[in-house]
Every structure is written in C-alpha cells, then in structure tokens.
Amino acid sequence: MFITLEGIEGSGKTTQVRPIQKCIEKSGRECVVTREPGATAIGQKLRAVLLDPKHRGMDPLTELFLYEADRVEHVNNVIRPAISAGKAVICDRFFDATVVYQGYARGLDLSLIYHLHASILGELKPDITFLLDLAPEVGLARAWSQLTKGSRTGSESRFEEEHLSFHRKVRDGYLTCARNEPDRFVVIDAARDAGQVSQDILARVRQLLDERGHAKPR
Image (cartoon, rainbow, N blue to C red; front, side, top):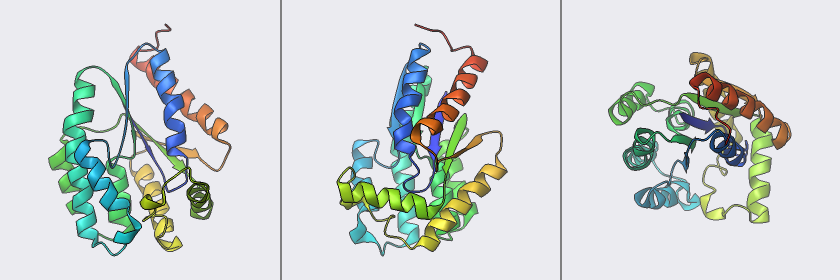
C-alpha cells in the first residue's frame, strides 16, 4: 500500500502522517514513513538547496531537475525496497507536487515533467493520494506562524516567501490533478480542526485496508 499526502504550505500534511501510520500498524502491517525532498542522505543535501530562501532566484529548470534527482534516490533506495518487502509506505509529498509546483505554478512543460516521471517511476503510482485543500491565505498564515514560533526552521522557507498568486496557482493545479484522477485522489477540507481532518482520512484508510484484506487487529 502506497499513500501520499499533498497540499499547499500549511495544509497540515505532516500532522496527518502519524495518525495514518498508527492506523496501518494497528492493522498488523509494517509501515515506512517518508517525505520529499530529503528522505535520503543525498536528498537531505538537495532539500537544503531547494528550500533555502537564499536561492529564491533559482531557475525553474534547475529546481525541476533537483527535485527529480531527489526522487531517483528516494524511489530506488526507500520506496521500492519497502513496497517489495510488503510494507506500507506513507509519503509527505511525491510526484504530484512536481507537476503542480514546477508545472502548473512555474509554467514548465507538463509533457517534460510527465516524461521524466515515466522514466523514474515506471508503473509506480500511489494507491491513494490525500489532497489537503484550503485557501492559500489560510495555509500561508499557518506556515508563517510555525516559522515564527520556531516549530519549523526559517532555512526552509523559500516557498513560503513566494507571492500569493504563486500559491493560488499551486492550489488550482492540485485541484486540477484531483479532477483528472478522481479514483486516486481524495480531496479533504483542511480548513477544519486537525482531528476532524484525521477522521475523514482514517475512514478512507480503513476502507482501503478492508478492501485489501489487511485489517487484522493485533
């Protein structure tokens, strides 16, 4: 089982990872939690470059190829081995983020992005993708609150510093992806309390576990 979480800055993706992990492990299945970028040793160095606000002027193509380089390492060293071992995988952002941020928001050729993904991923695709959707104004306010309070590091604020118009394109891009693949995407209203969001997500996760015969209480 391969689950991904997507959404704009401040949508609460990372907060929802732990409840999903606990739900899956309670069913008796091992679970690997990962993220993009930065899930490998090389990925951590790429993450530092990609999210550093000092690199705000990075060319969009440079940004794209750095994300794809991170993904090669991630897929080959973390995701594929875990799935091959029969483990569930939960990933905080995956290839949809590249389609949206570098494609819809930056304006890069979507056919190029999909071509790169086909080369890197082959047939690998999440079984389900939770899109935590909310207004960019709300998400950015949450994200900056976390940065101000120190719960997140300011050295990773490059995307938070983008104009509001950029984040609106990101949100619209995600919603377009969800409309294009309704069987994979589950759109969640992320403007609500984190507990309410969890309830909706976990209901769908339990349904997926039941469908696959993995819901075996310990």
